[in-house]
Amino acid sequence: MKAIQSFRRVPSLLMILIGFAAQGCFPQPDRVVTVYTSQDQVYAEPILAEFTKISGIETRTLYDSEAVKTVGLANRLIAERSNPQCDVFWNNEELRTRQLASIEIFREANGWGAFGFRTRRFVINTNQLSIAEAPKTLRALTNAAWRGRIALAYPLFGTTATHFLALRDAWGEPVWEEWCRALKANDPLLVDGNSVVVRLVGKGEAWIGLTDSDDIAAGRREGFPIIELSLTAESMLIPNTVGIIRHAPHPDAAQILFDYLTTANVTSILVNESAIEGTVRPEITTLEPNWSRLLADLDGATKRLKSIFLR
Image (cartoon, one colour):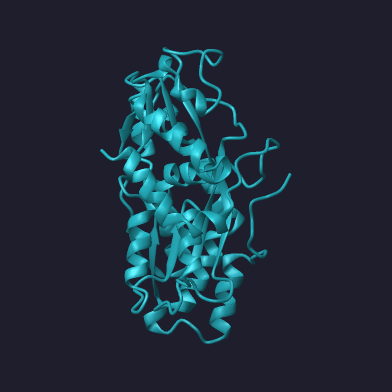
């Protein structure tokens, strides 16, 4: 089994701070770091607060919105590239991080990396369906039996977009487009975000949802009668990513936060909160995007998605 961890081993935060202090770093302007993050605020806020408590570095944080997820933050970073306002981009998915890396938004050396993962998978309402009755493949969602009983986030944003785009690359354009059109014709509930998917399934307004593991865990904590289905070859792993912006206003503080977010302690907190599932890949082979091909046709594929799922 392979760990999702592309970072070098980092020392403890205490050693990081000692090292920077010895170098005479931390001038007054570097006692602050600006973070843009798509990590859910309920998980990110206490982690960043603890970072400030330990390091003395204030974090100024901009969170995303549930409706547009990472796309909004990515577009903002692109718009600011000639005058960066952000130091660290903490993203809880991979596509937009790779998109930004491809246009050199991150610093040249050790600009970004991935750690931990969530998964994309089915969730079902156990009052409506048993595991045996539930669909086992994405293509089965086009069956008439599930008409009007499926919930998914609008697939132009967030992990839903990444999943759909990865399927396009894996299946090929004709098969993928036929499936997308058949799925749309099956009258799914298209909503603003994966947490809304879980809520609809939990309330029985939908029987089946396509969503993320952290949202399923949150729904179960709320007492919804839901359960996730097992991973398949069509499921997808979603790493957390973190990167330092090229020409960041506070590079020293950015490096310290970068190192802190990739420590085992932060990973453990995220696992305990069900924000991620772990760092070791499951035994089953899941969908692996070809990022070069996906990014090369990102605009074209997004336009196809918009034309099919336009509300």
